[in-house]
Length: 390
Image (cartoon, rainbow, N blue to C red; front, side):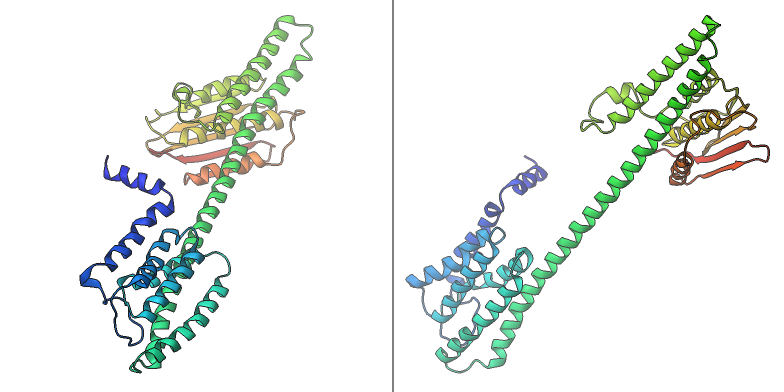
């Protein structure tokens, strides 16, 4: 097993299992001959050899470390009692060093009654200091007891700082996740708007035209076929979009065989569909698209799609011009309509499509504009930088 694999296995273990070695380490080192009597010492009591109570004190100071993160209050209470027994009996074991560690851990992991815990520990320290001063030979000054208390307080503050840092990081991650969800919902809303508005507008226009073709069965059949084809294309595009919401999206091979992003060549298909809806469209494409354009292809496609949709809705029958120019570092799209046509029944909207297009282009660092002319026409222009990543 590799080192990283071992680390992953270790992290998957319960916290009590991961903290067990620390408690055993303190317990074992306290019995080493070279460390006996060289641990933490508060007061000036003489060091005495280990006896039966020493085993109890060492167990209380070491073994509760196993639950220092699971039950921090229980761990802190047991270790504190063990430390008091250690000092009052004069064992001065190495396990006494566990008290600052437990204070750091409790300050970091204790969630409730933190102030009460601090007050109780501070109050309990006073009789311990008095008892140690009376049992000793009087060589320990009050300042030294206060200094040790400040060291313990510093350990607690260090744990509190770790806790605040962890909480701040969790809040930051939650905020980033919420912003990501909001951005994703907005992106999906734009995609739905582009797909549904364009195809439904084309279907409405084609269906309206079919009402006047009852005397020409051949043309009526062509118009109804166009409505059917547009509906199928709308279903296909919606399926692509809904696939993005699938939990296993990106794990299979379906996306590789049926990509979501429209290729640049599909702009011509879009133009043909608009022509079949009764809109005269001139299409010009200059330059050769680079092999990798990142998201620029999709944005260019959406610009043309939204502009043609607006032409169908607000200027049906007007001559429309679509120009797409491919350069080495950008794609330029210009769609203009002369505005001499008529509005259709689908001419309802609040400009959300153009706002979405501007947002798409701005994300890629491009320029977008939509302006109307004095004769009622309008022009949509977009300069979309090409990048190698999507």
